[in-house]
Length: 403
Image: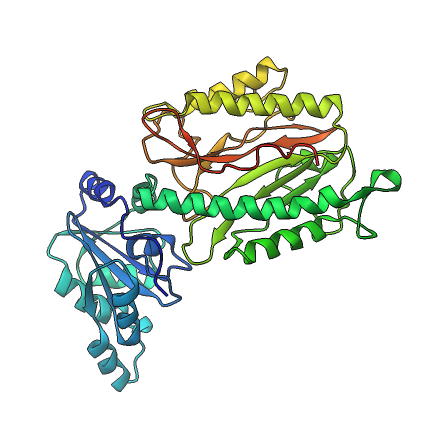
């Protein structure tokens, strides 16, 4: 099936980073399902492991054989291929497997494609491949962050696809929220849905089904924290946890589009019925802190300036943060956000305080406040950095505080 992602990735960034690193080419191996770099470089959605080779300032070349090569030619945006079919056949005649003979495969690939001196490989390259290429006598350098950094700035096509992932997430969350809306308040404030206590497991199942109908899937298990359990923002929520009226419910969803592989990451905190004054104070503080960070987020902004806009806003509302007080056990006890794209967490890294945001970076902003006596409140949306004010990519869930 043809991917809807056109071949518009930020190859200029990759070429620039390769030049800075002093490498003449880079080679990666794997399948799109297991190695995001492969999908980013090729747009080829398959479980087949392929080799992608790129010389600096030259287009990518995919090396593969048999039917895989035919599908690459029709489904990938890469226009140049290297046919390994004949080599694979010769190995089979000798009862040898290609995976067990990387030295033979890479001798052919590099002899035909590599004219430089220094070859870069990502840190996810199989060890057998690294050893094989080194045995062939090439100057090989492991570049753990090069492709990750090249992926940090998104093309217009990538941004559009992340927005598409956001739309699917918003629609699915809206559908799942209806369970809370439709529920009645029973004894001990337990929410009753269709005659049964409403559990985290019920909610997650509804959410997962809604995502599936929109050709999306959970990149990892969604976070659904109820009441005081929301104090621990690492907690995913147990299936038997029961939702109650008046308590904050943190719902953090980060699904991936099945076909296009890009993710979105959205968090809302909702309450069924009246919100206590304490929870409202927490909610308003988090909402304003998020707005303060958004106002600071632009091309050229120093990462820690955006962080501090959030943390200082929370401080003005009386809530601590680990950035301002490393020993804090309550308040905001995690970072402000992270880059997203083909992975839930990728560059830019919000802990690289002195670095700057660039146009095309796509990040989440997810401030939160956590109190042991109450639970937690967190809000999260996805933004693209521009020359002006950052643009919101996840619209449509602005009014879901009270259900």
